[in-house]
Length: 240
Image (cartoon, rainbow, N blue to C red; front, side, top):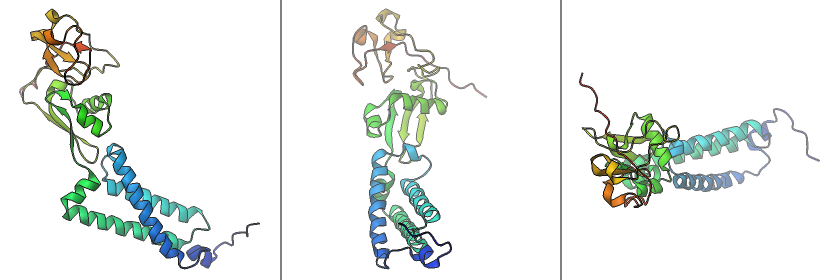
């Protein structure tokens, strides 16, 4: 039968029930778990940690766990938890130093920008690299005020998961994304004679192609999609 917990037992509070050599094991265990968790976070990508770097996000997780365990479990010595917190902070400072002084470390830990929109169409290679779907990209573009893929010259997903958008100077035809397709699906285009200026827009990626080459049953050379709609040109901003 377990011994009852004696409140304010200083030896238990600070040292727990483990031998002093357990402090060294804590160092090794913390290093292993920290590096393993960092690898997993890098693998899943940066979308879930937007506005925080990978290292900052991992610091929050590690400190939260160490502080929580020491606060709630009577068999966890405070010195053990304080040692874990100190090790995590020192690792974090070391990684910050590497990121500041070495570009290779920054790219490895924080990731690199990936192009997900280019020339008014979605770039499948970049989206697959960041494990992000077309619907999520389009939703993010709408949140930045984009109404038509033809507006976007370049869009990059940064290492921290944020989206950087660069628009064309003049309006260009493209796939309308307002209203959302889930609210009001764009009309499907099947007759080349009905295509504005003889071009059709892929519903899958927004790529523009000559209507006679893809309608009615052709596949999109960019993404392999088979559904088409009429491209739309939105008016540019009004002069002040």
